Amino acid sequence: MTFEPLYSLSGLFVGALVGITGVGGGSLMTPLLVLLFGVHPATAVGTDLLYAAITKTAGTAVHGMHGRVNWKIVGSLAAGSVPAALLMLWLLAGVDRKSIGVTNTITVALGWLLVMTAIMLVFRGSILELARRAIGDRTPPRPTTILILTVTLGFCLGVLVTLTSVGAGALGVTILLVLYPTLNVREIVGSDIVHAVPLTLIGGTGYWLIGEIDWAMLFALLVGSIPGIVIGSLLAPKLHERTIRIVLAMTLAVVAWKLLA
Image (cartoon, rainbow, N blue to C red):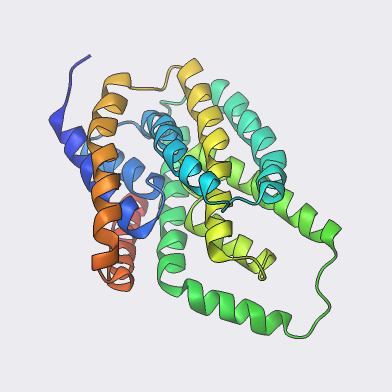
């Protein structure tokens, strides 16, 4: 195991952006590892999933202490995401992950998810407003319908996160805000973060069991990212978050273009 300072520097950068914007590290870390360091996509995804499980645990504790977690939403999401994650891990264990087909599948899926994340970062307000207008004065869906849709969302997130490590942040939160328009945004975000911990832990553990974790890289990333998240959280109130989000969205769009080109 060789310690690589550049991984720690990348972790510091990503951690700071996560602290400032709240956007999950997967949308930044995985493509950074693939494009900048030439890490195989499967190894990058697996290592990033464990990285996310560890870093999001602290966020879970904070949101839990402040009562920002809706456990019914967390349970509904997990009811769909956990079976989906296990299914994806079973499929990945049975294929040659170094093959061109699997590599291309992960890369293309990652690229399009980054495009969608960039769109959500910039246009989330407009998207939510369009959803509210579309719903209008219609009768609200029955609780059973909302439950089914939430479990379905969880299943989709389980597939996407296990395959690419991206999806549970900007995408999941936006859809939850449409499904639960009366809930506080902080409660939605807190519930999404709490749900991401077992999902990323299951995914990361599965990748470990199939031999796709780089432990030296994981350690180096954590060394940089933990202080980075603290620094970003302290800087956030002093920065114009809207500007940071636009810059981040443009960065993700460029990265997505590189992955899809």
